[in-house]
Length: 312
Image (cartoon, rainbow, N blue to C red; front, side):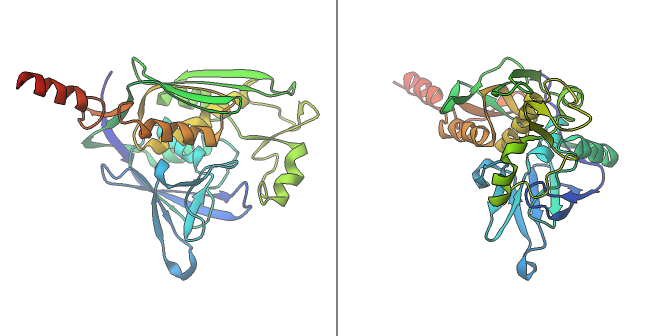
């Protein structure tokens, strides 16, 4: 496994659009950031001009219904962060300050491709600091009804195996398997769009969701067929998009994962839950940097036992 240095953007870049759920316009600016600062949202446009910094970490997730939200809705939050985070994680960007003046990341075309284009236009700059990875040391699993997710140790890199099963001919049972790197992300995941069912629209509107959804940013399904005139970008675009969401949600671990992620009928809540399960077990993970495993996790008990034996 080749360990690499951290990265940030070469220059700032701006993206504007509307939120798929709020329907509200938002402008976000991706700024270069210092090494070891991670991905951080700067939420502006709040009452009283009180801007708020919100690190993109699983500990700050406040909701996972239909999208992932970080921060406190009452004092400042950012929703639908998964496609942007997927683009950053998929292209291997470690440090970015995301300035956003609205409550929701713009949906763009429903995929991560517009964010990839923005990152490409800004350029990527390597930094002196070594990248830190999160290595999965033993299997953790969560289950919610018939849906489940697992993180396993994996010999090299980050692999995702995401399976979905919908009772509609337009989707059916699909599975996407991918070894994540910038090339595979660009080619196989970035353009996969979010999707929804026409029969759910009225219910979602009443609940305050999907107010900005349209055929320009969502693959819509009705009567066992895709409504969009252009159809799908791949026959299995649905499982590819679920995989894209998983990449974005799992980026909330705060470091690139070295492991295998498997899920069946997963979603934002399940992706978040597997991170909670992983970090709840200190023997299940370790951070590694430049080939060195940091102490304080799985190895600490072994080292204490070895020390005691030597001094018995």
